[in-house]
Image 1 (tube, rainbow, N blue to C red):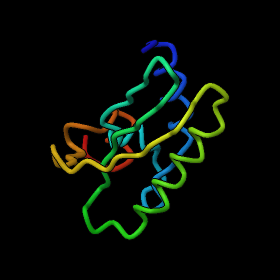
Image 2: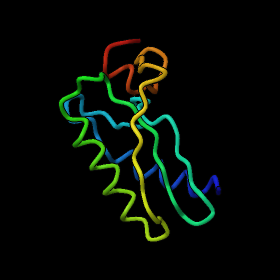
Image 3: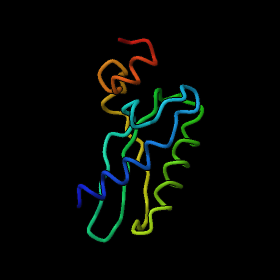
Length: 103
């Protein structure tokens, strides 16, 4: 896996905003990992702000759509992960914490 490819994926994922909070899923720390095989298969491991998030399917669809726009990506996958549980105090970027009033 190329770290450059992972950086490109993360930059594209940064354009996806959580529909309720209006903050990037990257800045919120919802993306737990990006796995890229030599063949260009990409799996994004992400969580949601809560297991009951009503817009989880929307976010997953947006991630899949962003991945399919990258010409080298084959067979994009989105994997929901619930462990560790999302904690905005430890997982959000400093900018996101400021927007959420956590700092």
